[in-house]
Length: 125
Image (cartoon, rainbow, N blue to C red; front, side, top):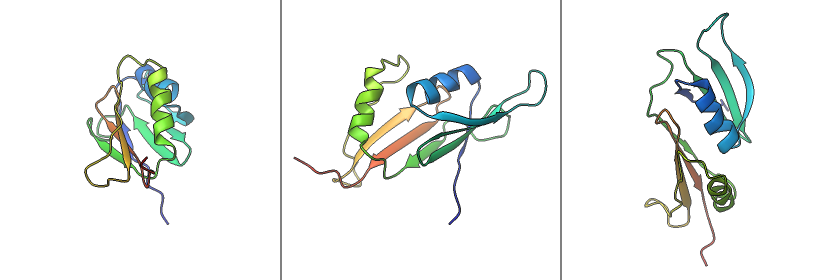
């Protein structure tokens, strides 16, 4: 099966690292820039989730949404995000309209891209 790697547009490398690496817990797998003060293109990952982030004009559209399904232990991940006191985003967690046995968290990056994290078949008490 093919692997999908969304390309998300970013405008500031430091803000992207603060958001994706320091807050969300992704790692930088690799990055590329031409010589000088050129735009950066990088790959970040967290487990099976792999994203490409690009400062290049024409690579992705700000405000894109990425739906990440089958995210394990979403409630614990959500709690860990809130504990970090990231001042730009304090996402909620809720049961989505499309699946009463799921949980959903939406995080918005500094460039208005959204990651929708979903855990399925969550036991209800």
